[in-house]
Image (cartoon, rainbow, N blue to C red; front, side, top):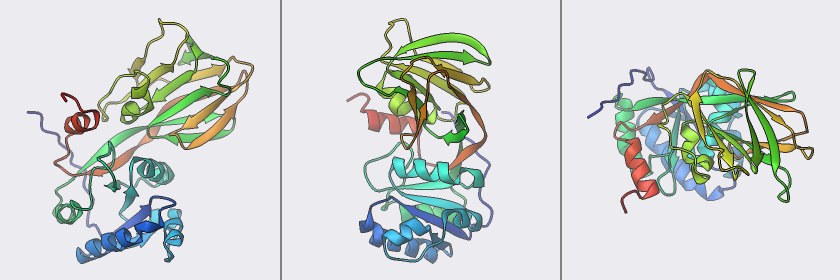
Length: 288
């Protein structure tokens, strides 16, 4: 049996910041319960201001929150956690995901498990995963992605044409609906739905997956993370770049999108009992 070792722990935990799923004012009672549980363990809870406004309480801006707390808590699902990780990335704060629906790929702690997890947290019985992030640029816009960067056609009536380079050297041309550049964490998202491979989330690699390619010879490609990838839009209609399904940038003909590994990693707090392959089995219903 493989034993995972992770020696990174949070020293002397005193405070945590909470971000709630947007447009969900019904989460007020859940927030108050979470706050009560952590305060009983002598961990102060601060609430992000947009979340606070949503439930008619007082909060503080996210940037100030990140500076004050030891770690962040995302309350919702995988989409909420994606947003929290990206917005707080520069502050290097670990993120704990509390899942309010079915088991998530990223958020694995339920409200029922939270009391016992807080005890484990106080006793240093938890783990911190360091997940690869990618950073990209288009025109003067720079961004980071936790799951994926998608280059997609603007119009559903035509294909998009994209030229691709690795470390400045041409390696492929894509004709089809677009291209996905995924992190290992994002390999189970859009990448998986278009036939891309599942890659263990602590691996350092890019997955480049064509979407509905015109040529049957186009296949997903897994490559080491120390390469820089550049995509140039050949199509005269331009394209759109979608970051983690949340931010969208327009790209015109002959403009380029550059993608490389980010200088830092995202930090995820998990139960020591969490097993990635069990999550795959349950989410994908393997063997059923």
